[in-house]
Length: 382
Image (cartoon, rainbow, N blue to C red; front, side, top):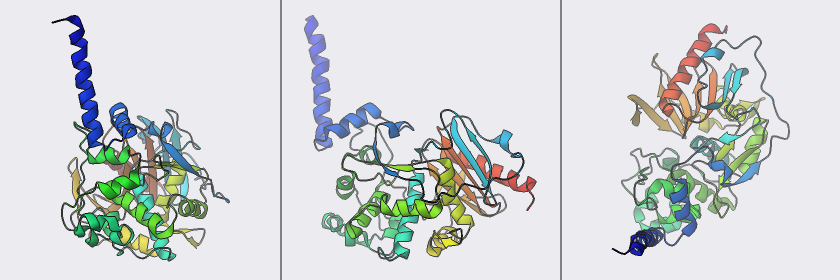
């Protein structure tokens, strides 16, 4: 065989594969290149993704600090972490930073973003900006029912609870570009993607963790109000919380937010979201999280496990994972890829945020934080 044909054949195969992938991706070259070059997500993706910014609160409220040494400092899970913040009884008990982390350095929260989106929607419902969670998604996105009439049965609350009946897979095997997970995470036109790609798997009801869902909620909000959840609504939340530091939200090439994963935030300010769940939704006597959001998140009804991680059955509602406790109680957790974990423990009055890169599975890290909260409560008067 002539030497030059050894090179021509591989190039022709590469060209064929690229054309094949472009056809699957409807000609979106930037999307194909992202999928091929980036592959799996990373905590460094915030360095290349575009983003919008949220300023610190007009009147920041620094965390009050507990007196004395932190009794659990030596037990903090610092491996691969960038930041760990422990709040007990509304006070900053201890914090740890390393591997480039710092008190004022925001980090990618990944799917913890879904919890914040749920809160923003609840605030919009409470102030009358949008209708309730029973609003059909097709009221705002009628193109869905034009594709499949079954979309008309899906309500905003179904999307927030991951019970929409929309199919979703996190598979990233060949041919990559036509898979659900990368089509959302690497989308160049995310709003268009979530109108065109989702498919109905069942009537609303069964749990399917789904990255289309929060983006459909965000698209509905934009259609209904003419603005984005991650702009004025997020800024108002940041002001109401008394956030100490700016935050960011990653957006696609058209400025549409990645609602499922885009939040970039400091651990200190993320902990404020958790503290709302322990303070009746209030900050300095002002209602920041609506009562309906608290009731929907904390109500013991419908808390049966919906899936199992490493042998631990967990529930999911209102953007929160429901973690079982050994005493029969429940804790809340917001969990994002690569070990972004916030555990909220009502029984121990504790919020723990851990951000960085992963070293165990998310459920293992969450269980570690639960044990730390129990230990802290056992050695702290109150």
